[in-house]
Image 1 (cartoon, rainbow, N blue to C red):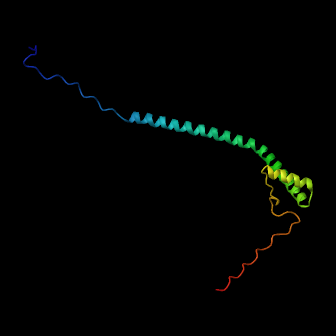
Image 2 (image 1 turned 90 degrees about the vertical axis):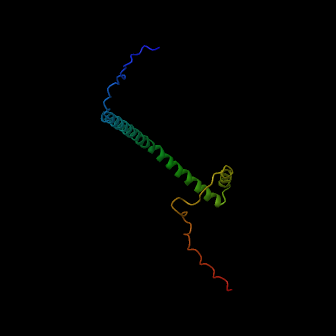
Image 3 (image 1 turned 60 degrees about the horizontal axis):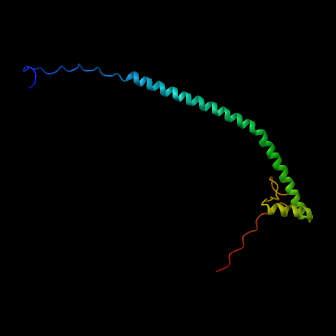
Length: 131
């Protein structure tokens, strides 16, 4: 048998806990998020500055490459003109370049060749045959 008193009273319940106030936790969360966004903004600004510096440093080599390309295209155009006039050395050079897959644009980037006639207006369309 049990050793319980017959007039047992119900066990005592612990006192109810006080409700947790969410505002301090929310304030900490907001501070952490603002700190994170601030750090990300600072980091992105630093990277942007680095990219601008890299771009500024690469402008001079790009300008030199553009000048060299313009010189090469000028030489290739003059070689093409010589080949058109019948120079065998220029013809051999053009054949070798074509064999290697290099194409030559005989027109300068500004438009037509010097001394070449200006392009004429397109010919009018032929009238349709009667039905």
